[in-house]
Amino acid sequence: MEGGLEHLKAPFLSSNSGELSEVTRLKCDFFSKLPDKVRCGLDPDLSFHIDYSKATGLTEGEKEYYERQFSTLRSFEEVDSTESSNVIEDGSVHGEQVQSERAMKISNLANVLLLAFKVFATVKSGSIAIAASTLDSLLDLMAGGVLWFTHLSMKRTNIYKYPIGKLRMQPVGITIFAAIMATLGFQVLVEAVEQLIKGKPSLKMTSDQLFWLCIIMLTATGVKLLLWLYCRSSGNKIVRAYAEDHYFDVITNIVGLVAAVLGDKFSWWIDPIGAILLALYTISNWSKTVLENAVSLVGQSAPPEVLQKLTYLVLRYHPQIKRIDTVRAYTFGVLYFVEVDIELPEDLPLKEAHAIGESLQIRIEELPEVERAFVHLDTECEHKPEHSVLSTLPSSQI
Image 1 (cartoon, rainbow, N blue to C red):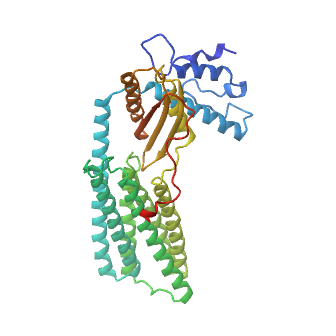
Image 2: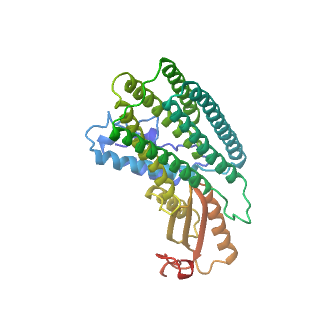
Image 3: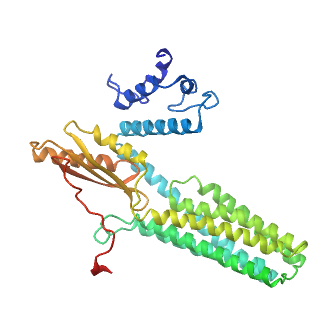
């Protein structure tokens, strides 16, 4: 049973010392106890990867269980393998920031050009459909301005006025952006339903109007598709919001064009029905974005995988740490705030205890998902929680 595991027992990352890391020991112990139906699906070239076509007989619950276990071990490996490389990290962060700003500038410039193009087409053709598309481009430009302002605000931080930085501007900006888009969807929904109730079809488009409609919508769709391909791979959430908007525009332009042409050539009600479908998609899609970013601002707890990763880091950080009282992580914007309470020997000198706590705080803040960490030192773990949770505002603040 052990003979086929040698390729799995080698450390994932080479170590100068001959000793196995803690996560490697956990991995070896975990793999040695795997049942044969799981073992036969392990990929020797990829760490913690199961080929389910080979691992037969696994239920959906078992697959989910082993995926979670492998994910936990991967997070432990990440803790063990992280080394301070600030020069490299600073360079990569700067490069990513430059790329993100370039993507935002290109998106805003494209929105300006498309708006100018559509204004010209609206005047030229007199089409209400093109006028509606022009209004959508104007809203895109306004929303893009909100995201750009958010990005600039995050960069310019007065530490005396904003002592913990302005990273929370990102979810706030995205929430405003998404709310504007959802409002647009609701407006389109009302107008489309009103047109259906009245039963009054739109005026037939001339061949000139139809020509301009197709040119504008196809051009806008092509530009938005290219922008989506450019922005979607960014690690910046603001740029990904741009990408989501570009992708949404590609879908709405295509569906809107098809509905407008079919409604003009065949049955008039196809156009408002298409508008209703797009409006419902807009409202549901952007309302979900509003909810996700609003929740990130109210202190939602981190998932169990993150808490396990933090516990593993703290538990093995220093031999003087006797016990862990509390590991808490919660959202306060995009990243997590972390609170850790540890027990140290009561006869440990203050200078040494402080050094352990401070270095642990720095180590936790090196994790990519953590913005700030607070480490509390104590000599026992039997006391009540240090902080109470308020359920109402003080009367003086109401």
